[in-house]
Image (cartoon, rainbow over all chains, first blue to last red; front, side, top):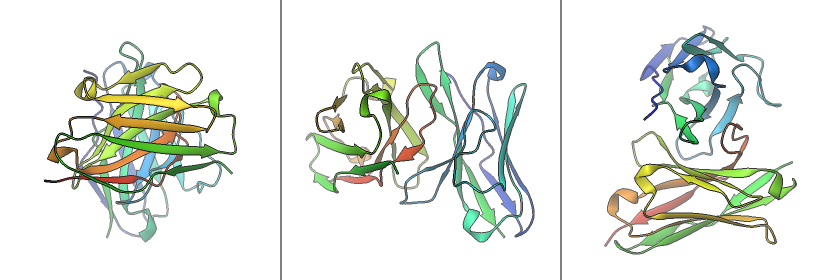
Length: 108
Length: 118
């Protein structure tokens, strides 16, 4: 089965920049979406199609995708950014949506 | 504004079934699909499957293939996820969202807590 790999945790001080990576096999051809999830709340789409941002999502959130790695970058980190972040792609061969294992972002 | 409102919390006994609903509003219902995920206590988000609201086509995660059925009712603008033969490890918060296949899930329901306990 297709696997997306994320670091389990990232820790960043307020005001600094967080970078969360996501990698997979033959990743370059897939569009990557990123979700923010706080426990007990609905997930929130923060980046779609590698680098597009939904309306209402602050410009502090951005995405990039190069080769086998996609990156979610959050600048000027705030306490409210503390959450789990998941990358997700569609795997055409199986028609499955695949989620990464999630990265816990801790604001120090 | 798009709204997706899920049904309320459920408590079920092992072996029972649960049917969670998601009522959508303020967009063309059959132009999108729905994705279902769940989060067990202390665990990561787990993808369960998706359904095309126009033609009812589905794709289920292999783990749930034998126990899950996803449906939609365009007349009431509601999506459903039924999980059968419940076990204690099905205790989780279940989420539905608008979007499926390669389309990002851009709006989510508030989640439905399902507790499986004898």
